[in-house]
Length: 183
Image (cartoon, rainbow, N blue to C red; front, side):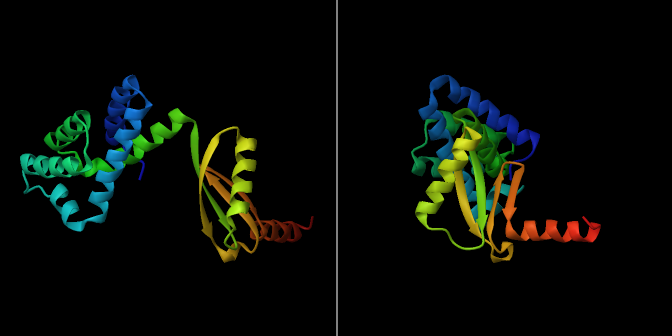
């Protein structure tokens, strides 16, 4: 849900505050935002309260502050969320958290990707794929894995907007197209 310009502006503002104070603080901001965004997305009642125009900004702020108290959030996070409540932007928490995480990953040189295979891979094979891809890309990767039997074999790697399709299904489709064209 990485998204709109408003959420990116808020994420960027918080990121620039944290950047001056060190990577540990940035990690703390990210964890707090992820916790809040998860709470809003997973709890239907909380989401409804955050989105409701009937609930006053002060009531929303009080609710968020109590959640932040449970998270042991710092003063900067509390001030940031207070500002979001005052401006009526608490509904953007999931997008802000995603944008902030993307900025933090970029600053750390981390790329996230998805590896799709036809069968579930053993852990040693996952480690082998990860190390080979990191060597080829020159970046630190954090991969998640999915299984899709329809690809028949091979792998599909998606990192950001780039998709590398080395699946048997893709190769068969390419062969079919070549035969149709008479090559």
